[in-house]
Image (cartoon, rainbow, N blue to C red; front, top):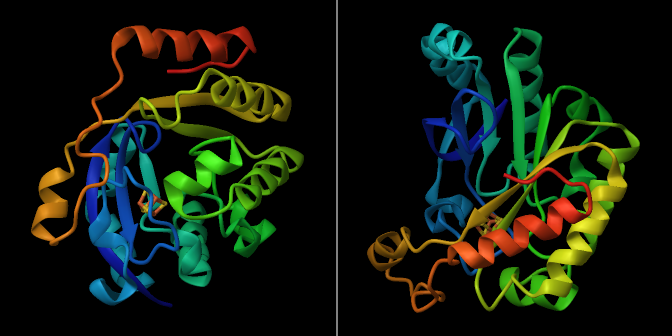
Length: 241
Ligand code: SF4
């Protein structure tokens, strides 16, 4: 099966449990203002690979990953832009006993088959804002498909971590956080919410690509704001980290 990727890397911490082989697919329909991977936006900037080649690459790290209780995470870009390639990789990894995770915005969740979801041990679902107007301002797209996908994952009882990037002045409105916390609490399959503090580390990448980083003047959230947001999730009985 052919696909187009941007890169792959080994990571610890934010892309699922343990040490992970993380594959960044190329192409994304959104344009999040805080995107850390603008080099993945256009499929034509990626390169062609086959799932055989990726499985060979994963095989080199398999022992290391397994000892570290990790696995494989398909990220992007947006992996569901290439649903057959992504499904094939998830299936082959899952079949071989590797823990699998899929990192997605959920915008194209309708392209994920139930079989693909069954091959995904952990869904990393980015709900970038609950408020539709904020979501559109932040990403350029609609939030509704993501919320529908979240509900489908709940109906299928698929283990899910929700990821929420906290951006001062953009996603931090108390009503927005509260509505997201209430929604997540009602799903029943979300093990935790990762509150990811906005940062500006990708500024250099944007400059190298000749792009303007839209949030260059926005500071990271301060400890008081982070505490308030965690408290809002906890008030709804949601575990946040
Ligand atoms: S969905 Fe992810 S890869 Fe796409 S623009 Fe947003 S942050 Fe970047």
